[in-house]
Length: 338
Image (cartoon, rainbow, N blue to C red; front, side, top):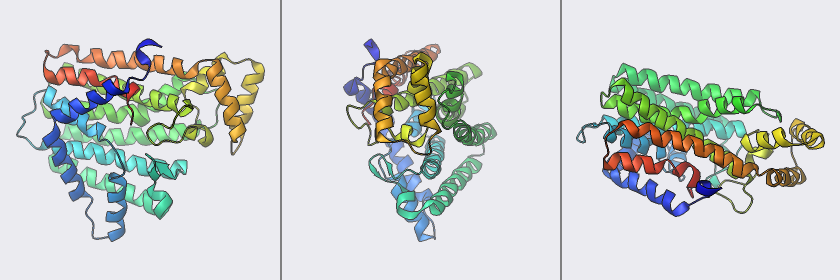
């Protein structure tokens, strides 16, 4: 496995370095989030506050702030704070909707809002967060960023629908899987980092470089997350092992074992994912195939490719602390412990 074995200490250090780089700005993002969560409807405020305070690490907001700093945004400006808040609200809204779609009762080890308050309220509060996000974009007034972030929201929705469309397909193509995660996950990462470049009035080459940096971090991030759903030694980040499996989501480890399996094993996978509900015995048998064909290891190796592309995308920028910190962060997607 080499470089893709989890090295949590160094990954966490890279995250903390970025957090320290923009620490004052991140505090301002947190304050603005609280302002935007305000509502005269008490249930909206209660649910949105609970959701936003349930353990997220604000990685997308940090990437927006860090990218803006690398690209030369004025440290005294406040647009980076506003638009980082916007990115974080988009992410939070999609999580609220995801938990309803997936019928999840836990996220990051705590009860989801839909488990506590029901699906209808969760969907509407997610819509509320998106509306607050669009208020921020309109107030900012930059048409390029407005177009970028609004189109990103559409991409995320398309990715979720595409995933539903292919739910239970044991023979899902790897190309289709990459298309799905590019829309549902990587699109917001790339929008976050490109927003930082847009704020700084960067040239098209720098915008493209930061967009590629974010996109490839996002792809690696999602592939690693999907692989760890089958990493049965421990529960990672408060996420139940096998969650994707029981929900019928076909991710890269399953695609790999289907590609390598014999006829009997393929038939087992097809029949398993045709079921409305999969059993613990189904999961144990699938884990045996995952181990047999080293699907977790190979998934992480594929994710490493995207880590390398992300790291190299920043090569056009001059050497500086911001560049070093953002490049060091690329391994975070594979090696994080939260």
